Amino acid sequence: MTTKPPSRHPSAALYGSQQSIAASSSFRELLDSLSKEQRRNQELLASLGFALRSFTNLHRFLELVPVVAARLVGVEGSLLVPFQEDGRLWREQLQMVPLDKWQELIRHLASFEAGMKVGFASDESQIAVMDRLVQRHLASAGIFATSLIARGQQRGRLYVFDPRGPLVWSDVHRRNVQLIADLSGVAIENDLIIQKARRHERVDRQLSSGGQIQSQLLPDSCPVIEGIELAARCRSAFEVGGDYYDFIPTRPELIGRRRERGRWAFVIGDVMGKGVPACLLMTMLRGMLRAEVLSGLPPDRILHDLNQLAQEDLAQSHRFVTLFYSDFDPRSYRLRFANAAHNPPLLWRSEQRSISRLDAPGLLIGLQTEAEYGCGEVILEPGDVLLYYTDGVTEAVGIAGDRFDEARLSRTFEEACRSSATAKEILDQLFVRLDRFVGLDHHLEDDASMVVLKVDDSLMLPSLRS
Image 1 (cartoon, rainbow, N blue to C red):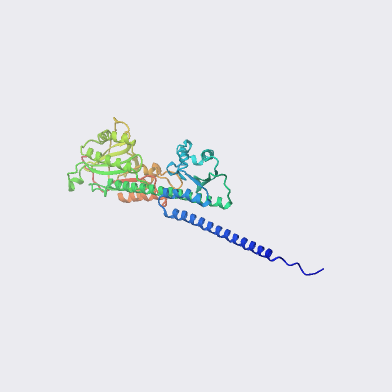
Image 2: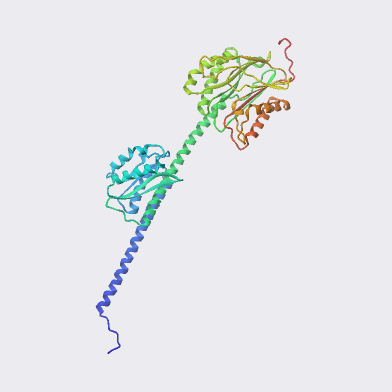
């Protein structure tokens, strides 16, 4: 018996070596293949990421989504069904590859009745109905579906499918498809944000135009009128409103001292509503009113005629106007007035040290064709102060949530009249109090306009006035 181990046949050793080489070569080829696939997938995802940050046209980006999705996971087809901002199916943006083979499915989705309803995207039962519709048209194809989610909102559905049969996928495939869906959801959400920003820009431009219109409506300065001083201001809100005040000479042809001693009309009003339409309506009424003032009619007739002239235009716009109209004669210090449902001005009587309201019966301008208006009058005395204002003052919301209201305005006005010497000082004190009430960091909800008329303290009234 020998103790030497049996020697191997040379051919067996060669065969084993060849097998080892073949296995090693196959392994390298597998690694190379996996590496190439990984690079290809990275390039596809990178191209989609580039498109997301580079394209300003959402349609061009969404066209790429099903192409990249199908190639990324090695299937024949893919379908993207995006949703609009209100949750409806976005028919114009349906994307699919290959489109020529599945046009019937696209037509059925475009006419899918449930998808045309607002809020469809948040109705899971209807989403499931749509999924079944897609499955029926794709017959025995293997399908994988996932949602496009952005900021907690469902922005669409992404389907990948293979007509050859069930999908055999790894978790990597699923993650890749979900990544594409997430990028698509971000793209749709970004586009919605851009569209909102553009709408806001358009609104801002309209508000800017409205602000220019409104500023042109209001006088640049107060006129010089014998025996009284005037101060006026409009504190604009965040949105453009329909506030209007004006000082109109009844005889504009007069100049110099004769103009200062002539009769003047003092007007304050407000169009119900905000924005450019309110400004345009007030521009129209301003022109009509200035023409009516030249007639020399008393205040009640002025409002009656203005109401009839503006009736048709206001009816078409479904808006109404409040307006307080008064005329003042510096020779007699008689103030006549009529009111079309505007906030009654407050009158501080210097002699009695008390406040009263100037009011007369009358309906809104534009409410009723044959509306009648009452006419009142008052003789102003030395030191008397008259405050015209719009509802943006009394309706201003304070830090605590309550309104400035007429009672608070009346108390503030009385304090200002007792402590201030000029019309401007009274006006400044009123706005300081209003701003403190609203809060320096808060916007008014509506324009707040005030006009202060003060009779000279040293005035000697005509002895024959009575």
